[in-house]
Structure formats: C-alpha cells, structure tokens
Length: 143
Image (cartoon, rainbow, N blue to C red):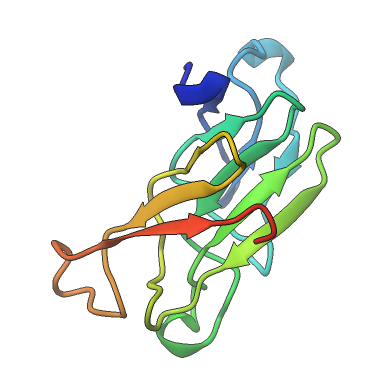
C-alpha cells in the first residue's frame, strides 16, 4: 500500500506466537521471512504494517517486547524497529511505561523527509483505564 513521501506499508503476517516481517509483494507460495521477532528485547507482536524507505529498510512498531520493567514486566512495552534489506533488525527505541511515554504502541509509524518517525499510543503514562487520552510520539533518526 503506498503511503506519504514514497514509502510503502507492508502487512505483517502471523508466524508462530510472534510475528514476522515480509513484503506483501511476495506471493504467499514464495514467501520468505525477512525477520522473525522473538518477543524479547527485539520486540514482539507488530500489530500494524511496516513502511519501507528507498534504501529498502523497513520501519514499524511492536506492541510487546523491548523494556520489561514497571507495569510492562510480563510482556514488555514495545519498540520502534528498523529491519534492513538483509534482515538485520535494530531497535530504534524501546518504550517504557512512564512519563512522557506509554507502552503498547499499536499502530505503525509514518516517516518524514528528514527520517523522523511518528506514531501513536492509545494510552499515556500507564493510565490504561482512560484510553481516550493517548499521545503522539516522534523518534529521530538517531533513536
């Protein structure tokens, strides 16, 4: 699916209990896994698709994994990730469950011309009973 600024969004298919990342342009009979999340520090359960830049890198979020402290101790608070065209994953940011962050980023990200990534949380500051609050985050190219 095309998105703003020439980036494409790719769905993330369910593979075992985590999720793997691969382009939708690969036919299901010829699918290969680019990266399989472990649910640990690298993240797990990317609920939204990923975007791809012109160099072939994929960017997205996971709702689980990353930081396992605070109220995220059991599942993790989620990460923003980059997977290069060779399948090497880099965690650009691991979320925590405190101000000014939240945990469990559920939608994916968008990327501007400067390489900044933007996304949203349905909650903020651990107040999961008030989902209508939420917040928008920005991750710079350096993480």
